[in-house]
Every structure is written in C-alpha cells, then in structure tokens.
View: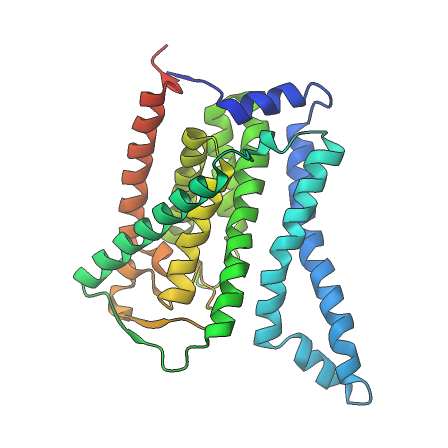
Length: 307
C-alpha cells in the first residue's frame, strides 16, 4: 500500500528545502504555542478588567477574571491568537507558503460551503441516531440570546479553522513530507486527541473518538487538499453540536444555544454523557464509517495505491 503526497504536501516538501524542519522542533513549537496563546489572551483580559476593579477589594478582580463567562471568553479568544502565531511560525520561521497549509484562493467560498454542509450533516446524523435510541430529548431554549449566538458563531468559525490549520495543514503536512503520509495522518490525530485529554468529562471512549475524528479530518484534508473545506467541516460540526443543539462540545458548554438537549444519564454510553456526543458509541461507529468512505475516496483519486 503506497500513499502519495497531495498537492499541499508536495508544496510543503518543496518549501522545507529552504529550512528543513525537525519533527521534534515542530512538536515543541506547537506545545509552546498552546501554552503561550492563552497566557497572552489572559494577560490582555486582566489589563482590560483591571480598571473596573480599581478601588475595590482584590477578590473582586479575581472573581471577575476567573468567572465562568470570562473563562469562556478567554478560551474563545485564544484561537485567533493561536492561528496568528501558527501562520507567523509557518511563514516567518519555516518560510513556508500559505498553499503549503492548504489555503487556495480559487473557489474558496464554494469549498467552504461544501465543508460546512458536510460538518452539519455528519453531526445531524449522529444526533438523529441518538434520538432514535432515546438517549436524549430536545426543546427550544427560552433564554436564547441571538446576538451572543452570532458572536459564538464567529468564535467557532475561527476555532475550527485554527485547529485544522495547526493539526492538518501544519503538523500533518510537515510530518507527511518527512516521514510519509500514513505517519503524518496518525501522528496529527494523536496530537489532536492529546489536546482534548484535559477537557471536562473526558474518559477513555471520548479520547478514542477524538482520535478517530482526528483521522476523519486528516483523511478529509488529504482527499480534498483544501483547508477551507476541512476547517469549515470542523467548525460546523462543533457549532451545530454546541450553540445550535445545546450539547457540550468536547465537555465544554456554550453561553447560549438555540435548543436545549437533555441527555439520558442512564444511556451515557450512547450519548457521551457530560462530555457530549463525542463521548458516545454512536460517534465511534459514524467516525469509523466516515474513515472507510474517505479512504475509498482517496483510493479513487489515486492518492492511495496498491503499489
């Protein structure tokens, strides 16, 4: 079985002749970015909150900074900062082009729309199957906040794209160009799963599912060769699950949602419990099916051959 580089991987291989990246160096840089980005956002947030706490007891400042809403805001704002850092490292440190990350100007709106539709449809299938198995119930949220909903949408569009640029466009393409496509796909999916291990409600099946969907997004990017499509699929998967259906996204709840979903705690093996749908067996099955479908699409495209 032979895996052939797609166009963005070939571009990565060509670009890295200028500065050949060490795999350990790439790994440590990514870990550093994950540490630095939230610290930068937290520091800026603290400076913005400080004027409102002047003249008040010190615990007031601490309570504001570490409140649930502020913590959520910091987590959302971390992603645009992280995306900026990744793009700077890619371009300024490794001298790699945007095309090496899978960014192409041609038909990008169409690709983004296709990816968004795929992410929405995949999550909807998982949700409907959970409804069929009566592992959850749904009703409209009477406290729905439209303006907050739009703000969260923007946050998810950036969050999904950031993770795909980092794990697929950056890590997967560099690893694939150095050690082979299969190594790049698996390694990027392992990193993707490790990043979610500290999330609330995480357990063994949840991390396995995150790894499987790391493979799904990796194969989708490998097949499509387009980060717009893959980033949109990731964003709409998360946005549909959280702000639309009111389910925890990898263990984290959103500030508002169009619907409220109540899970049957006795069927957490199916619905994922407090981690959200990504912790349930239905996501495991759908993820494996998607991997098989994408594998066959890659074979049909000639990216995977028998020799």
